[in-house]
Length: 140
Image (tube, rainbow, N blue to C red; front, side, top):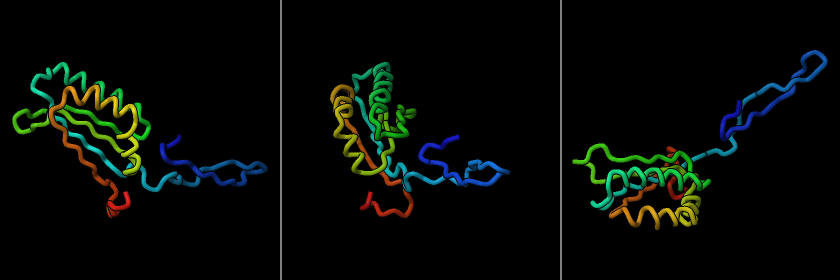
């Protein structure tokens, strides 16, 4: 069994005349995977229909999952139309601010912004959060 982000380390033990490999423990390939969470809250134009919102959600998933730096992509639409001005949201994890800049500069993301977001969204609020407790955000 393999765990993403971890690789097993093996030690040789004598079992009779042969040696067998036994797992000792798992070592992390990276000490801090997925440290930043990016959230985008979107308010669509009034002319955007509920069917179009569903299409936006599907297109967001399809396009953003093509970017290899993005992990844990979430897309959703609002439940409470009275108290929530945002029609839908998307969020994802990246390892560093540098990789987030790479995501925003990628051709797939720029195309997504121009073809999906700009024609349908009146206002967007984007936020980034550090997910590692005790880490100085200046080093993200």
